[in-house]
Length: 460
Image (cartoon, rainbow, N blue to C red; front, side):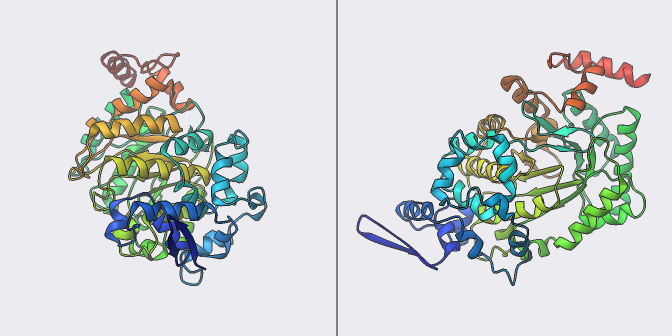
């Protein structure tokens, strides 16, 4: 089906829904690299105006990647909740935007309707929104998950403690973990990106994390972010696996390039749930995504990178993860060129994931060859805090010495909590108070004092 729109006596034709979505996307370098971007600002606006008039039912009848050739498409169509969709089924994309911004769309409504949205619907409506619209709607969404603590409650803001080390030295990692705990990071997860995927090394790190958690009764979860096949192998050897990690994408071809498919993820999910290691819940998966991954794998199928990204959230949603985050600026300027594009992409990703019912966090990050600096990331950090982002990264000094990129620090999580009046996960906050790291009003005790108090407590 083709789509047409006339503006200033010039008629624009878009051959199919995939093309229309692509041309309506706010400009970014990745789509230009793929030859998919609108040729002019006027064409982009024409595509957005045309997209606004597309009925939502169209997305159930016209797949951007064929059902027959892509298992992600099959998952999207086969698991779509028609009962939930019935509430919004009469809307066009433009009408959906207006309704999302209205008072009729509230937290309870979103929680009921999220199974009725497809990723393409979410991507489409995001293309019609200003940044403030994305923030306004995201802030109304609340997605709560549980394992050893509760993530995503309104008024709460969590941090993944990311103690990476270039040689996976357990002592260096442990030092970073203590540093992060003293600043109140780690309630989302204590998650290590291993320098290698060697099973023996990963097993050592898993045991170190679990021994630390058990010894000091820390109400959080641990994860070593190795490939899912490595985690499966280690679970079969009784390794102490809390969360199963995997990078995922929005096309079958991209996931195949990652060495995964849906059945493998299902196997890992079921194996982790069978361990029953959670205490307040059993959300066991941790996924990472990022705009540009399908393009970098030459597996985007002619779909713009933001819509591909939203499709990855259908994969994540199926497995009810405890955590998911977009590593938004990690791939590089070929995909998101500068601070403006990274900020826009992050707000889109957060919005689409929350609309689809996912516990979305964000790695507020960039590579050193992008046209971006820490001021841009400070701006994005505050915007995401206002938007209700579930968690961010906590990296020593904001400089990941293993992955060689810039992220957010333990101090950044403290800043957001303080400036916006947010608190850590409730179970973790109780532990912080008990350790003398935080007082009962949610104020951070000075690090020098909390270090002494924690040191005294650990000696006992």
